[in-house]
Length: 371
Ligand code: ATP
Ligand code: MG
Image (cartoon, rainbow, N blue to C red; front, side):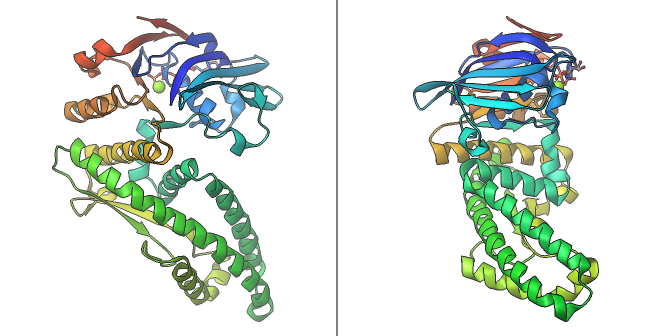
């Protein structure tokens, strides 16, 4: 998949912008606060209808303007089509594919696939369980459209069940009602777990081989799913359900005492091991960063396997944080294969050979000049 052109109106610090990127590597360089991340963010927004760093669309609107617009021409499976998102100050958002308005998100999503890698992704390894669940869930949602809907359903059931737990003081009286919620929770929660296991099984070998190459064969990456249920990746759906139910019943008293649901995919986590050592607790900063990078590159490969096309890769400010070897591996592994948008403050972070075949743009106060 490629983005053949991008145009912005009133987006962040851009008044009016039109870019015609190359199908291979595109480098955007400039000083701090010139608009490099804003540009990548706009591509991410065009793909997902949201920003990766703000959930308030209003913040993306260039000061005092009535609307912003992001347009792109996409090429996918030998077909070209336009994407167009307009956001108005009053909160109205219109998304179009090939000129046709899409009222529901699932009809729009998938028109442009992107993988973004930025320094904040270190949180997948260093941050809390929520970050890791988010990483996995986003991954699954990209290749399995039904999954996002299941997650929303699960959240709804969870919050209803939590409400009941908070008000439960008479265990016998409430237990009948709780059982109704239990059944629903287990039903949808088990489907979520099964999907997570399925995708993780595909992702793991890709992440392992990437990590092995990034580290020049020195590091072996393992990923383990920590299930509160407890369920294992080799479980069938009925085995997951049974184990889920048993565990849920065993913590009933505790749940009522604490007023919250203690078992289910919303409490699960992943552990990353490098050469059998927990990367979150004992990994060096560089190893943690490489783990996050391996996961992102595995995501790219997984999407290729699932859709037959590479997504567009957005690399925001990550070159300066990698050593020469890892940087070289990253860029050579995507060149001529994946359309890539790289931002950097310094062109010296790039190999001469790669620079010679890349399209280079200078970013300066919301203006972009092709070099
Ligand atoms: P760095 O190298 O530090 O990461 P950058 O080039 O990635 O810098 P961006 O984050 O893309 O910088 O752009 C930051 C600039 O955009 C800031 O100067 C900020 O004031 C401006 N900016 C952010 N939001 C808006 C907005 N809604 N309207 C106008 N300007 C904005
Ligand atoms: Mg930036």
